[in-house]
Amino acid sequence: MKLTIREIVPEDIDFIVRYENEYFHNFTTKFKVEEELQNPLIHYYVLTDASRLGYINLWIDEDKAQVNSLVILSEFRNRGYGYFFMANILEKLHEIGIKEVTLEVRPSNKAALKLYEKLGFREVAIRKAYYNNGEDAFLMYRRLGSD
Image (cartoon, rainbow, N blue to C red; front, side, top):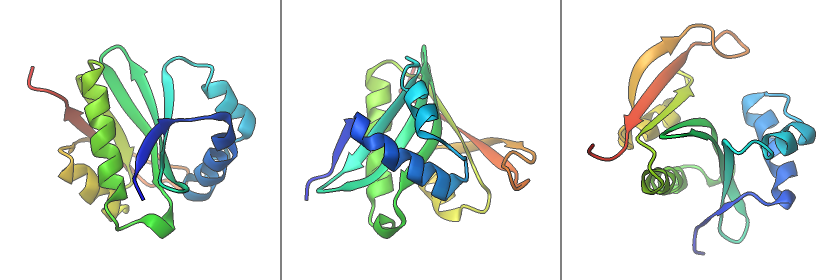
């Protein structure tokens, strides 16, 4: 199957809510996601082949972007989908003039750290007790383009 990246459609909202809650324990609701979609700074993209494989939630403001969440469903991990998805999103961000991208990641999430480092992100700070369970977060940064 061919991988496709597309913008969120209303039929994706329940999918987003389910996996935000399952993977991040964010207690997200359908109303919250619908409300976010009214904010012109928040963007969701879905990775698909014959079915949904994952999604990304971005905050895009002027020439900066923040990755709020990136999910590849557990049954589709370790197949290169995360790299494909993020590399294409970073390319898209660069094309629309984004110069800097940041994200937070758990130090215990070794697979995500490896992915982000492979994509050129570097750790620039530690956010103490960032997550609900008290775990710290690494703030990671990547500059896009050469200027």
